Image 1: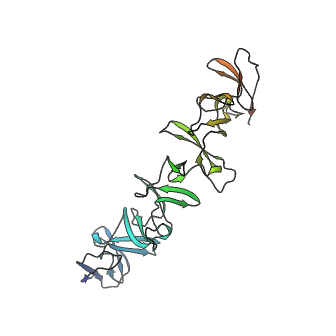
Image 2: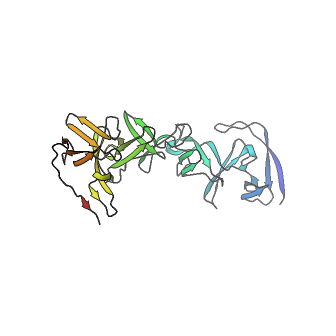
Image 3: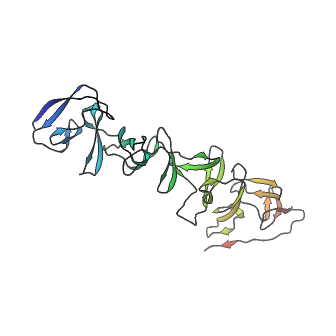
Length: 307
C-alpha cells in the first residue's frame, strides 16, 4: 500500500486545544475509509487520510461495529483502549457545561465507548446510554435514585448517604429498599459491618432507614418464628429498630413495658419463651412481658407447618 505524508499546520480554535506544531498527515492513495492495523495498533482513515493526529485527538463512529472510538493525537491517532477521556462534545442531561457539553467518557479494552454499567478493579460506574457521559453525584437511572462520587464517578457501595437528615443505603450506586414500580414491595433488611448492626430500609419512605419502628419480616426467625417450613426452619417475626436504626436484640424496656428480642435473629418473644434457662410469658399479640417462671401460665403455640 502506498502512503503520502503532508504537513498540516494547526492554529488555536475555541473548545479544542491545538499545540501549534506541525502534524504529519498520512494519506493512502486508494482513498480508503476504515481501520488499518500498523505495528499492532489500530488507526482510522477517512477518504484515505489518517484521522486523530491533530489537537487532542478525534472521536469517530464506526458503523460496522456500531461503536464510538477515540483516536489519540498524543499517540499519532492510535485508537485508545482502556482509557478515560474528557470531551467537550454533546453530553446530554449530565453535561458539565451549561451549553450541554463537557463529559468524561470511557473506552474499553477493545476501544469501544462504554455505555451503561461498568465495573473494574476500582468500583462500579455508569455511562449514559446515548452520549457515554460518566454519571457523577445524584442521578436517576431506570427510575431509581443513584449516587456516584462527584470526582471519580465511582458508585457508592454498601455505605450510607444522608439526605435532608435521613439516611439511605446504597449498593453498587443504587439506593436499596426502594422499588417504586412494585406496590407489594415493603423494603429491605441490610447488615452494616461498620456498626455490626442490622437495619430496615422502608419502601414506603423511599428506602429511608427506619428508626423507632416495629417491622414484620418473613426472613429466618429462629425458634420463635411464626411459620415452620418442611425442612424444619422457622420464618416470620416481629423485630424492632431503635432510635439509631439498629435492630434491637436482648431485653428492652419502654413506657409500654418490657420486651425480649432473640439475640441472633432479633425475633420478638411472644407467648412462652425460655431465656437464660428461665421461662417467661409474653403477651401473644404485643410481646409485653407478663410474668416469669414462678407464676407462668404454660401455653402452646405449635405454629403452621408448610408443605
